[in-house]
Image (tube, rainbow, N blue to C red; front, side):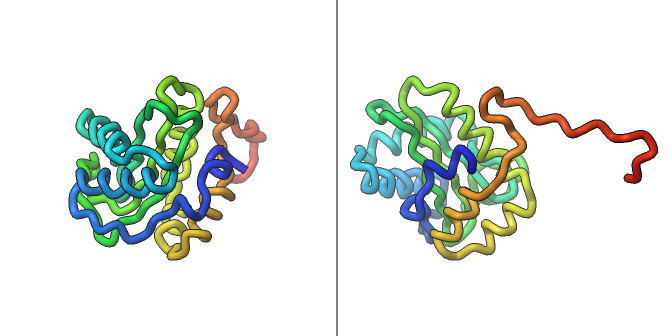
Length: 172
């Protein structure tokens, strides 16, 4: 179990966004989140777009992690979305993005926001996880992949667990 397993349901997985640019991605995501969580989609869009304008949330490998603080929510909200076609998103690796993991947190959240961001970043840093995610075509399967991922990050202190010391003479 990880931080994401309690936040992401299969209803929070959206496949087939039609957006062709970053602004439209934020608009489509805001509409979905607004409907799903009874939030003002314009407020969500403004927060996501403002964050995107301050610096791209694309992390490479065709993935972005748009995130924002939203006044009025009391717990973190997450959404995974995939676009039909890759979208230019200002990634450092210059690759367009088709997978978006959205994180919305209450206005004054700090530790929880960082824990979610660290967990998702860890997931996306693993090539095998990215491959499984890309191959998955059903929301329930995608939700299960996120929920079953096992982290090496200790969420209580954000430190990477140390591997056991190698025995001298141990084979490589």
